[in-house]
Image (cartoon, rainbow, N blue to C red; front, side, top):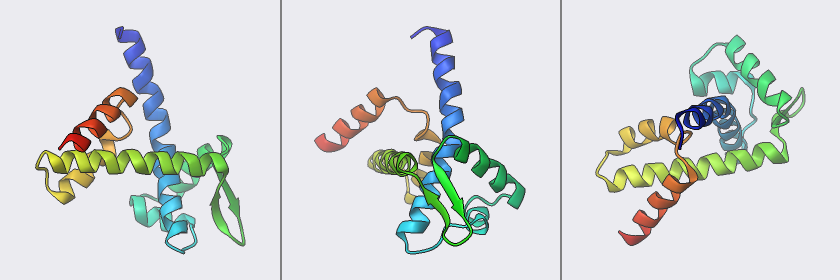
Length: 133
């Protein structure tokens, strides 16, 4: 892969990273039977109200989230698909790191950054490795 293409891919991944984290967190709240609200996301990410509002505005513009007074935050179909995909990638990376001997808390922490930057080829190689072990 040429350097320019590699850097383009990384820039796109950085752009998607925030959206993936937010839709994944919203999905986890909703699947846990809770409402997803700005203050819940503040707690999850440890950021200010303003930071959450700015992030939500960006992912709303991408058609991933809807905000309503009554129901709080809801995922669109595209948002739900992104959340499920992100969660599956995260879980795969955690399982892979644990198979290498990384402890639970560190595997979770490391996977949080890695999951956004691994190619489909690398993720598939991790999956095959885990199936063979």
